[in-house]
Length: 456
Ligand SMILES: *[C@@H]1O[C@H](CO)[C@@H](O)[C@H](O)[C@H]1NC(C)=O
Ligand SMILES: *[C@@H]1O[C@H](CO)[C@@H](O)[C@H](O)[C@H]1NC(C)=O
Ligand SMILES: *[C@@H]1O[C@H](CO)[C@@H](O)[C@H](O)[C@H]1NC(C)=O
Ligand SMILES: *[C@@H]1O[C@H](CO)[C@@H](O)[C@H](O)[C@H]1NC(C)=O
Ligand SMILES: *[C@@H]1O[C@H](CO)[C@@H](O)[C@H](O)[C@H]1NC(C)=O
Ligand SMILES: *[C@@H]1O[C@H](CO)[C@@H](O)[C@H](O)[C@H]1NC(C)=O
Image (cartoon, rainbow, N blue to C red; front, side, top):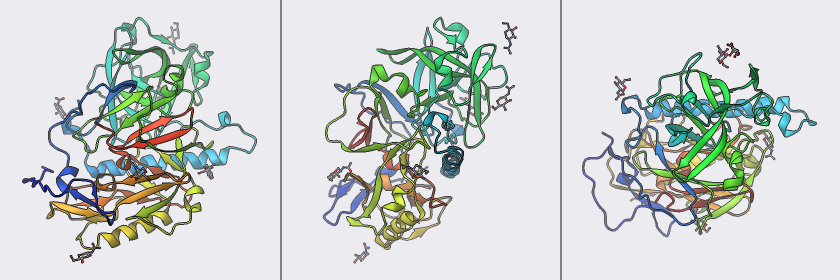
């Protein structure tokens, strides 16, 4: 239904072609998801580490019931509740932390709004393996799944509940286990460590902190992986059975598998919801990456920060003081859909973008997106390039598919950025802008790299 009926091929234009003026000429049809899933070629890549298939939860490649998928507007509303929670938490921890407190005393970050505009992967827990599909999230640490018996409540999920009793390698974590003390305010019940993660939209998961074998691929197994066995879970998690936490804290998969994968991972988010991407652990960085320093902020210890300091549109740098960005910092987050900028930076970007797009007729603003166009009568359009510039000189050049968010197909194609409500809110590089790049996280070397053509 989102598909345009006649797909005209313009042999003179290649999608993402950059002309001398720096503009993107893009074939509109390349931005549209198809109704059928097209799987990325599953080519084994030397040095790529453990590779898992990444799928958009609401696209045709998703194993979940398609009748439950969210509209773009619902996705945007959830996106805002995730961002509100990120900032609420930040204010909270800023207020409660004193100058003498160490990072470990600051309340550890628990979780975001469980935005369902998100990407999923299938992994295996236990012995024998039980296959489960979870959301992956670079913005939180604790991995959890719903478990049998659901003592209090479980939301309905499509896959069978994980059954600890059927796994010969399962054990619960005792309250004195060091792993328990890595959690944010753990409880203790019958000498079993009890975890709770609360998300921005008031959804939560609560249960027994546990240990079992996690099998990421047929050849890759993590024995003694710590995760939450949720027996008291609210609604609001869609159809996934849980979450894989890839944040920076000690409880995350990245920290737990440090000796195996050296805290090195990468992913590519597919360009549309009808294609697939990947998530890898370990391996070597691909060549031809544009890399920038990974920064840390002790008031948000689970997040990966980047030193964004400027934006260019069609090669012209916008007049934004770098302190507008550096005063609040910028995180890169797999779970936020639309990038958020400090208000002054966003209005500058929006004005420059509108000026370059003045030949196209405007479409209604929607939800958090205020700059939209009706591109339905075009086969190809010219979109200004947007480039994100970092403190150490790296530039990240975004093409049309990374700039536009199609709310209602080509008839409502919006600038996929939004301004923060408050100048003190953190900047966020969201997943719309990360699509198609291979995004490489090298934690020991404190570097994040971006490569072209990542999903193939
Ligand atoms: C999908 O969900 C709808 C509505 O919740 C339900 O009626 C239908 O039976 C489900 N289909 C499958 C295959 O689970
Ligand atoms: C604690 O353990 C005892 C003995 O195994 C059991 O009878 C009781 O139900 C347990 N309590 C809870 C809250 O799980
Ligand atoms: C379930 O978890 C919620 C959120 O942490 C908590 O308020 C509630 O008391 C829990 N219910 C039980 C029966 O433990
Ligand atoms: C960390 O975040 C806080 C709150 O957003 C901000 O005030 C502070 O400047 C940041 N520190 C660094 C080093 O980025
Ligand atoms: C708008 O279209 C006119 C006529 O085709 C052209 O001269 C002008 O350069 C275009 N403006 C922009 C901003 O692309
Ligand atoms: C990487 O940097 C080069 C040189 O600045 C630039 O031409 C290229 O477009 C950049 N790649 C990405 C993915 O931004």
